[in-house]
Length: 117
Image 1 (cartoon, rainbow, N blue to C red):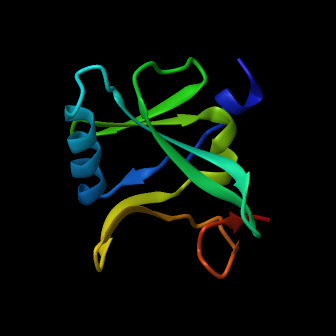
Image 2: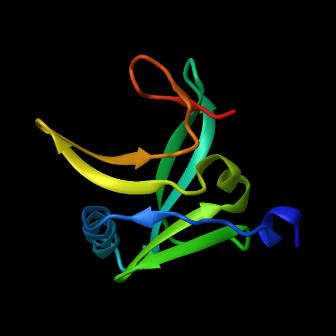
């Protein structure tokens, strides 16, 4: 096990709206186990959130579950998103996951990327 796997994480919090959306996405295909939240290098601030449906989990994933919804997070992403609240919001005609990350101290003007110290 790596040092990251042994670290005491605060975890992630799923709102009821996020839970409902993850369950909705998971029900589209019986092979879907949940949604993965990851980070990748992108944008002017440096990091962006990446989500995808999960059919096979990795041994390097932490799994956060709430009311039947499963959120998979690679251990290597935890230092950047630990303590994040995952929500699902509707803004006008747009529907999207929103991340309330207490560690994000800088974001780009369009809101697509973030940075932490």
